[in-house]
Image 1 (spheres, rainbow, N blue to C red):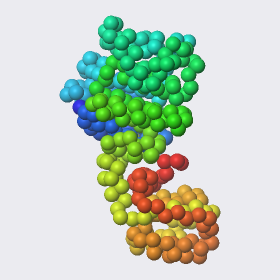
Image 2 (spheres, rainbow, N blue to C red; image 1 turned 180 degrees about the vertical axis):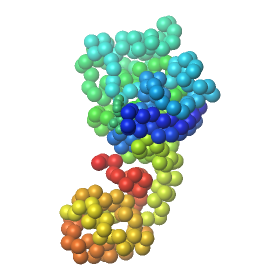
Image 3 (cartoon, rainbow, N blue to C red; image 1 turned 180 degrees about the horizontal axis):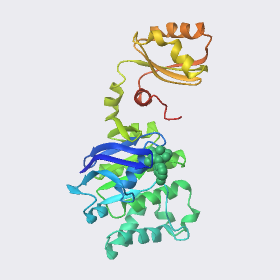
Length: 309
Ligand SMILES: Nc1ncnc2c1ncn2[C@@H]1O[C@H](COP(=O)(O)OP(=O)(O)OP(=O)(O)O)[C@@H](O)[C@H]1O
Ligand SMILES: [Mg+2]
């Protein structure tokens, strides 16, 4: 239902999207995982129609998104920065924002009540939004995106800055929306969120998709290997150099930053060799963890960086 073809967007010298292509089917929930500056908000802004001067195309429900204005009403956008009238209550905010879409006036009130129920804000719908917690505001923000029953919901970092319980409730809501047949794309930095919520995951960095698939498919990219995370006192370059002759011998360096590195090993019997190389160069190791391959390892392998950087 959505086909993004080779979107490219620069801000001056910064290439924010670099021939970005992606497809989404009806009812799919896609998690778009990328570090700061990967181009996530740029992508959502282009789809929302709020950015110009880009190349590439988007087909949505079989039509060209940028030439058919009626398609905008089939899409719900939940932006990274929330926008409400803080003095108005939740119900009135919904009525106001709903008025901007082509929701018939008569249906709007009923729909607002339904959607407040769905995001579990019915009990607080008469209170000014300025009294709401961060999590409640996020839910209202999401409600606005869903008010006109879109075929596609786009959420930009919907779980940033809210507590764990509020996150769980937003992710539950995303799952519910997908199960009801609405396509969903949500962006995040959080690996655990995409692991638990999405039918498909796309990893992006520097304006491009590096890999996509189900969690199991992505983890296969790392192969049948164990992940070794090493913490200590060392410079990134010294760490890489110390292990250079083990490269290819069942040891793959996934990432090395100062005092922290990750390796993929074909067998844990490689660990003594690794430690030996580090000790010989007087690189101190304070902690070593062995993990089975996970999405974090996939991300490290593809980008050479940790998402927490
Ligand atoms: N208005 C702008 N003017 C200049 N550069 C911009 C502008 N907006 C974004 N950029 C740059 O484009 C790149 C992509 O930014 P974007 O906001 O799309 O990333 P993001 O993945 O949403 O990051 P974050 O996780 O921090 O929200 C970054 O290098 C950013 O600095
Ligand atoms: Mg962003």
